[in-house]
Image (tube, rainbow, N blue to C red; front, side, top):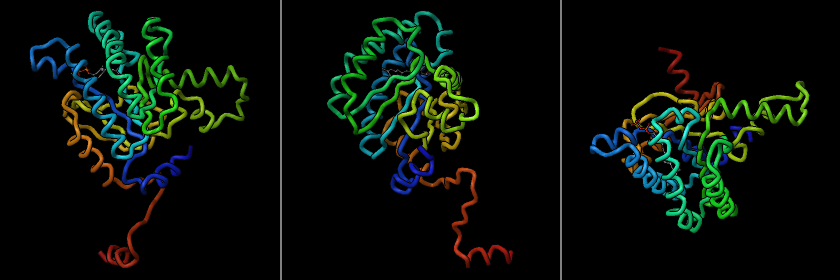
Length: 255
Ligand code: FPP
């Protein structure tokens, strides 16, 4: 889909159609409470479920979250296994509710390295929610933006598409989240100002929003602050957009 189509099609761009979030700060949130890091992730899941509904209520059609990066395997083994276990618990705790709330769930990332148990939980979540349309939640798990570009290239080669037929649209069609428009708004909580290998291809023209709020504390006030900042931005997609009235241009020239 052309980026212009979705920016104009959705309420003149005042509400983003697609929001991507790096949910950072769970570990620090837990440490401040003298609790194990995994506890921060657990409360982070509650913040995510809250945010899915808040986004849907505001008319956002796609929410994509970074739940486990290709690099997160380097964390201590008890945190990695805690996160895997947490996902299983979260699916059994929330899947029926999310399905009933009209959420379509998609899992993106390299599934080859996760356990059979987790893989079948993902399959079940996708199957049970496939026909929902209120909002599409993409959970990036064992995902990396560079991995996504590489897997797209591999599939293009496997399909035998000749080099001269490959353009940006070909790449976009082969990215893991090709069913979604590119994110309009990219949010990162936790105070770091980095993209950290999330959706590198798709965020080329996304508006970026960084907040010190730690992910478990993310709620409606934070979401609305991010949406208000987004609504103030002038999106140009690399073009010149002269929105000033003629009189104002004259006044500007005269100064
Ligand atoms: C970053 O915080 C957060 C993560 C690596 C994991 C986020 C995962 C969840 C909220 C759970 C997702 C679960 C489902 C079911 C989708 P951090 O650990 O890097 O925090 P820190 O920067 O304070 O150390």
